[in-house]
Length: 342
Image (cartoon, rainbow, N blue to C red; front, side, top):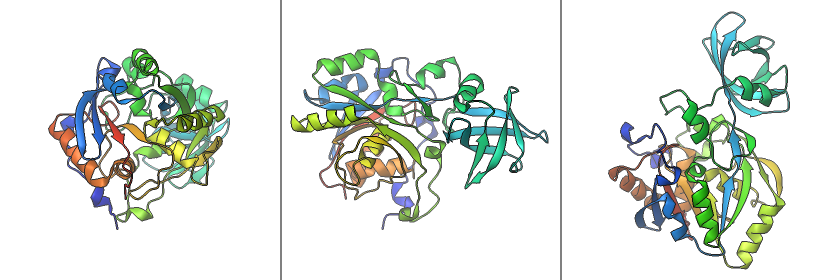
């Protein structure tokens, strides 16, 4: 039985990247094939792609999901939107000295009020007086991850979005995609590699810790995705010509593997709570590009399932010893899937 301790590792605080490098594709890239490791840069990615491959990216866009304000009583609050429920309602985390009660109102950013409808577990249902996304985008703040110590600034507004971000809805960036710039995408297509997109809106739950020792008891947060018929057809064409499917980021991988759980890959929209741990049967993705992940996190469990638990442990030791930069603004890995990752 795998436990939470199997996915722990010591990480010096100085390894956590607090800001992006000046050049998106200038980050380092640790290429992993089984037990083999190679130190390269992200701009070298085309060297590891073949004509006929397909690169699939998540085109979600981070919204200004962090809102500051006060309760009717005057107490200070912080709202972090988890996801929209419909045009006027959202699910959100609310940080306050005392939990707000159903029926109470929260005054946000000195601009508008929302009504607290009730709770769903650790989240609150909030009703906005106008379309929620419009108010969030007009008055909210970019929600940087909790391990980044500075408040979001003008540079973050650009660099904490991918260059292909289109569909508004995430509260965290699909960080592997942050390494791509137009020149790198052009070099990839010039190699004869096709591009495709999925949409998975990343929720605030992605930063929630695993609180159970026996990881089989953990339940994932819900995230919504859309997989287009065009992307399904592109994957089928890639398979037919003997190409590989390369997922940019764990969110892309989770979307594709979720849509293939019950049989052939299906286009459509849905919600996923898929929890990928060692022993998982991967059906779609052959190669994964991803950043380095937090100790004891579900994302570290996912990459351990994809690349093998011991090889990933060795890769992380190599990366720490070699001064790689970790987490959202950090460096990346290119992991070739093991045939048997159990």
